Image 1: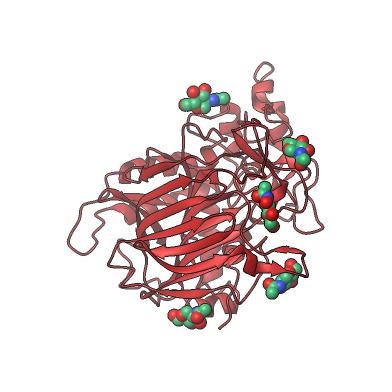
Image 2: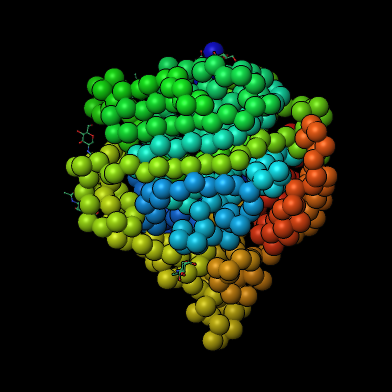
Length: 452
Ligand SMILES: *[C@@H]1O[C@H](CO)[C@@H](O)[C@H](O)[C@H]1NC(C)=O
Ligand SMILES: *[C@@H]1O[C@H](CO)[C@@H](O)[C@H](O)[C@H]1NC(C)=O
Ligand SMILES: *[C@@H]1O[C@H](CO)[C@@H](O)[C@H](O)[C@H]1NC(C)=O
Ligand SMILES: *[C@@H]1O[C@H](CO)[C@@H](O)[C@H](O)[C@H]1NC(C)=O
Ligand SMILES: *[C@@H]1O[C@H](CO)[C@@H](O)[C@H](O)[C@H]1NC(C)=O
C-alpha cells in the first residue's frame, strides 16, 4: 500500500487554488526572496501570517524572517466554544490571548467543536499558537467516516518533523500512527493501531514525546513505542526522529479528490462521495472535545538564553539548532515580517491618506492557504485602509461561502437529535467578517471547478 506524506498532500490541496502565477515558491535549495521572505508550510513565499506558525526558517529568506515560536504552555483546553480560536487571517501572533487558530469552518456542538468539511471545501484545520518542545499531548475526539475523508491529530514542526494519528474514513477500527523527519517521505514508518469504532466512541489519543522515546497511546494504553536510537540515518547523518518544536494540529481534510495524487486517493479509500449518508447538514464532521498538554522540561543541553520563544540558528534544523530565547514579536500588520515586525504601510499612510499606501498595489501573499490582502476584522485589525484594500479578491463568490456555511450549521443533528450549535451564528458572523472576499471564497470556487 502506498503511503503518501499526508501533510504534503494537504499542503497541495490547501495551496493549489491560490498559486498566483507570480507567487514565489520555496523549498530545498530555493529560499524566499527579500520582499516575500517567509516560506509557509505549503511552500509558498509571503509576508504577514506567512511568517507565523508553520513558517519554515530553513527555506525563508533568513532565519529571522519567521517570527519566533511561542514556547510550550501546559494547559487543558476544553473546546466548548470559539472564544479561544481565531481565523488565521485575523491573527498577528499574540499567543498570550489566543491559543488556537483555524482555517475552514468550526461549529460548536454539545460542548465540543466540530471540524467540518462541506462539499468542495478543503475541510478545517485547527492549530495551536503555542509550540511544544517535548511534552505529553492528548486529544479526545471522534472521527469522520466515508471514503476519501481523513481526520488527523498531529504534531508538526516548522521544519516538518511530524508525529501523527490519522484516521481514514473507510477504516474506523484503526488509527494510523506515523512519524516523519524534516518532511522526508518514508513508506515504512506507519503502523495501524486497533481501536473500537472511532466514529461512535470518544477515545483519548495521546502522544508522549520525549527526547529519546515517543509513544502513541489510546485510552491510556501504550500501543506503539519509537526510540530515537532506532532512527539513525547514515545517509543524512542524523536521527530521523521528530526533534523540533511542534504545533498541535487537528484537521479534517479531503484526501479523496480527483485533483489529488492517485496514491493519496487510494490510501484514503477512494474518491469522496458528496452525497454521503455520513454527512450531516451538508458536511462531513469530526468532533474534538478536549486537548491537554503537559510540557516537559527542555532538553538539558538546550541553548537557553530566555524563556519565551524557540528560534533556529542553523540550517541543519535538528534539535541542537533550536534555541530558547526571550525574543518575542507580534506583527503590526499583515505586511510585517520577522525582520520588520513593526511594518504597517497603512498606518504610515494614514497621515497622507491611503491611496498611495504601498501595500495596496502589491500582490504579496499575506495568509497561507488563502489569497490576498490580509486582515479585515478582529481586534488586531490594522486599519481601515487594509480593510478597503483587502476587498479586491473574489467578492462575488463570498456569497456562496456564506450560504454554504449557513446551511452547514442550521439544526445540526448527530444521531439522537441535537440542537444547532450554539456557536453557529457566531461562526457565521466571524466567517463573514474574517473570510469575506478572501481565501475561502476562492477556495470554494476554484475547488468546485476542479472537482466537478
Ligand atoms: C497581547 O495580548 C495580551 C493579553 O490580551 C495583552 O495584554 C498584550 O498587550 C498584547 N500584546 C500586544 C503587543 O498587543
Ligand atoms: C493499515 O490498514 C489499512 C487498511 O485499513 C491498510 O491499507 C494499510 O496498509 C495498513 N497499514 C499498515 C502500515 O499496516
Ligand atoms: C535517510 O535520509 C535520506 C535523505 O533525507 C532519505 O532519502 C532516506 O529515505 C532516509 N532513509 C531512510 C531509511 O529513511
Ligand atoms: C540532540 O540530540 C542528540 C542526539 O542526536 C543528543 O545527544 C543531544 O543531547 C540533543 N541536544 C538537545 C539540545 O536536545
Ligand atoms: C545560542 O542561541 C543564540 C540565539 O539564537 C545564538 O545567537 C547562539 O549562537 C547560540 N549558541 C550556540 C552555542 O549555538
